[in-house]
Length: 405
Ligand SMILES: Cc1cc2nc3c(=O)[nH]c(=O)nc-3n(C[C@H](O)[C@H](O)[C@H](O)COP(=O)(O)OP(=O)(O)OC[C@H]3O[C@@H](n4cnc5c(N)ncnc54)[C@H](O)[C@@H]3O)c2cc1C
Ligand code: FES
Image (tube, rainbow, N blue to C red; front, side):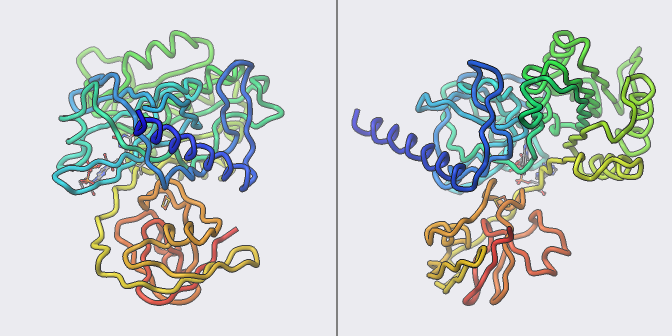
């Protein structure tokens, strides 16, 4: 069918552009094991973020009373390549209004013909509840990515290839298990020497996402994976840890890990965390206080999506972009973001989630004014230094921006 052929060609083109962009920005590709899919050694800026592609939903698994896993395959049959820790941006239309939301991939990056995302209901949340109530096998999802700003948890080459013994400490709360599940599944499979400690906090037993899958993973890698559940409201007879996974609880768990394993010092750990902000803050403060080098701590923020903007309020403006001594000049058509305009001018704009949640597209406004919807992931210090997120910033006057190196 001509339409199908055209779609396939567009999708192939989209992937070719993504590949070209990777080569242009000099990111390495690392092959992990013969015959296995290619895994990228660094976070991949998804140039495909400009062109959505389709995923066919083949299964929906109920994980808990308020969370589902959506199992999907690319509609064009092309492999879907990602780093563990990356996410997809879903474009969902509800009542004629378009919403964009990021969902971390929870499946192994070794598997490139199918992806799994897991969505937990947020009270009054528009998209998370809609997905939980409406998605079923046979549905089609429009997505961008995969993308993400977490550094790769895979050992860098040439020490990689599974030879180096490392210890990853993964700390999750609630739906924050999703990117860490992909990391655990992938790293345990491709690095035969690496050990993983997973600490997972939930309110009750019924809230544990991937309960059975985690048990199976631990059974499969019994010598290299340790799994500790922490429950605030445990069932009768529970023999595990009880309480909120806050800084004090994390400190006790860390003591137990350091005493019971061969890890000589905290600096030997690589820490990944994802969950509610107080949990991640507690982990950060504790590991920093104990001397973990900052570069060995990584967190994924499930920052709430920015509010929709009425883009018709914005007039066409001029734009000048500077990067490494070069300048690109042109117009930002009314309503477009700095990212959309910059890309069409050919400037080397970096981006990932396209929804103000990851910081990959940060630029500095050296002249003029821009407006961004709130909340977004910029800190108040960054805003004071006139940084903007190109993916959600629209100019209110002629502007000049610098792309940081
Ligand atoms: C990089 C990234 C990866 C993500 N991965 C996952 C994932 O794997 N699984 C998953 O379930 N979610 C994930 N999220 C969160 C997801 O993108 C949505 O924010 C979430 O599903 C809520 O969307 P909504 O439309 O239902 O809520 P909205 O209608 O946008 O918000 C409703 C209310 O809930 C608040 N809110 C929104 N999101 C959250 C949140 N995450 N926690 C607490 N309060 C919130 C809002 O401030 C608002 O008050 C991720 C977010 C990011 C940025
Ligand atoms: S691309 Fe993620 S914040 Fe802009």
